[in-house]
Image (cartoon, rainbow, N blue to C red; front, side, top):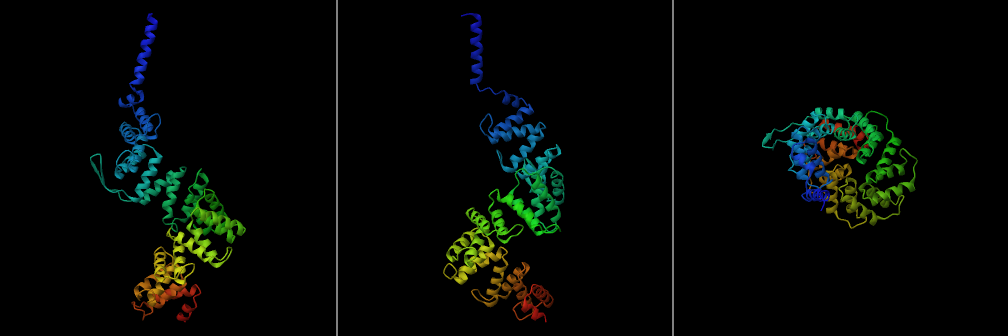
Amino acid sequence: MTANRKTILTTAAVFAAFLLSGADILLENARKGDTESQVKVANEFFFGKNRKVNLPLAYYWFRKAAANGSAHARYNMAVCLQKGWGCKKNSAGAFRNFELAMKQGIEKAAIRYAEMLYRGVDAESFEDEKIPAVKADQKKALEILRHTAQNDTEAMEILAKFLYMDAEKNGVELRGVLKRYTEKSPDPDPELLLVYSACLRSGLGGVMPDAAAGAKVLEKAAAKNHPEAIAQLAEMTLMGWGMPANKNKALQLYMLAVKLGSPRAKTDVAQMKLAGVYLKHDPAGAFKLLTEAAEKKYPPALCKLGDCYAFGIGTEQNMAKAVFYYMNAAERGNRLAAFRMGEFYRDGVHLPKNPAAAFHYFSTAAKAGHAGAMREAGKALLGNSGIDPDYKRAMEYLRQAAAKGDKEAMELLQ
């Protein structure tokens, strides 16, 4: 065998042995402390690129790289701590590392930091250190989000959700953020499109309501097969709000929304079947749809199902079930159901007579705008009802009811 051939064979054998031994230059460099290699290895373990997914190892290398000063690794480490990916969940540790990454210039870290700061963070031990609780600071959190939301659509999304918690107070800003988000996001969240549509249609923020603009935003959400958006668009199409009325198109939209499981659409279609308007009179079919919608705890469906049991519509009369559904609807803010409950407790019919409970339900329905409940709450406070009289409050309730056209309230005021 010649010397050259022997050299070639030796080199090939060494190379083969190198491969079989599983030598990993990237991993070796990471072990030697090279920060860039540590970040690459962590990402490969996290995303399953070039090696099997291994979240604990991904977290280990993110932590190593963060200790070496990598801002992106620190951010990813914080995400792992927040989600419990490859490590035990630790909100305090996540918050601290988001803050550090934010100070290193990572905008996504600023968003996560603000999101946690808005709600506050409980005290927790992290890496053998007891990290104290962080009080919620909504003002500071919103300031950070406003800054990052200039161009970042994720920050816009989170800012909008926080502003929506007090929509009346934040109406102008909420509307502006949602407008910018809708225009800039390549794939806007249909839930936020629904909120933006509601802002446009209601005139939230002190501007004139714009049903046509609201309908266009709803169409964007409906195009994503969002059941609630399709149901609302169906209603607007049927009534001609912001667009020409089109019964056939509206019914098509309603049927699609029903198929997708929208409780609103099921309730609206059930109402049509009960009334025999736009659809054939079908009490049994309406009852079935209302039962399905009530399973989703949709308040109007709960209340209407209570009516079905109370009056034997599409099913056998059953007052115990009627009361059950009315009570559930009232607890979820349905004013008509709350009024019904008030009547039951006031009269001692189907439920034991209870003036205090009756007033509770009447006042609840009154706050939601039910004129009859305003009248009954006012009457209860005039005396002889079983609760302490309060003439001033009684007059307030009666004036509110009269302003809504309640004739009995008008007569009582006179």
